[in-house]
Length: 239
Image 1 (tube, helix red, strand yellow):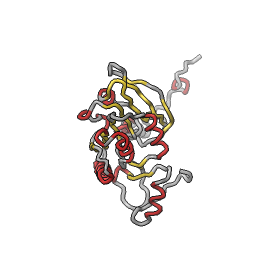
Image 2 (cartoon, rainbow, N blue to C red; image 1 turned 60 degrees about the horizontal axis):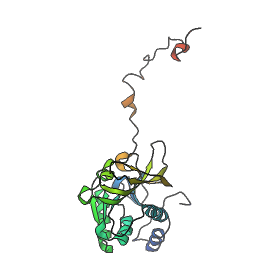
Image 3 (tube, rainbow, N blue to C red; image 1 turned 90 degrees about the horizontal axis):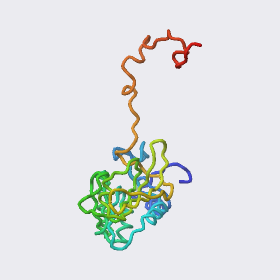
């Protein structure tokens, strides 16, 4: 974080350095380019990670889980956040959804190996996971620009949704802590802290292709008339 640069660390080749980074208060990228990247160097775009521990702990404090509650997590990643929840609530009370099949598989193996067999679902987190609803808490570990109503519908009245939300005008986000109303048809609440997460894959902003909004022939010589006075082009009238 201090240098603003990426460095690659292999657990097999340098286990001490790997452990040092794993124990640090830094976000660790675990997948590049949606899994298409190969080679030892960083790829073009990070697509899965283990979040900064201090941020994880602060968001779990905002989530404020209680014994006996059931939690739905959107964005499994390495499974570490789900493991923390399972340690507090029991693995049977935590469901986590991951859109990337390879990431979901690795997280499932890690959680089972650690002795916290959380249910890891490979699927679209925007749909939630109705089979285990209703939930007392829903937490997203990815940045959103629109919050799906399915999460409200799958929560109990008084349940809490903790969602990193932002706009398409910049990368900044804030954690919104929304409480589901008694009638179960809405959720509202304040922002708790600034955060930064990888965007939910289906809500990534994709710049349109130039030919999708420029009409055919617009750039051909002579396609633009220059005969009109500038004042007419600007919408001005002759005095």
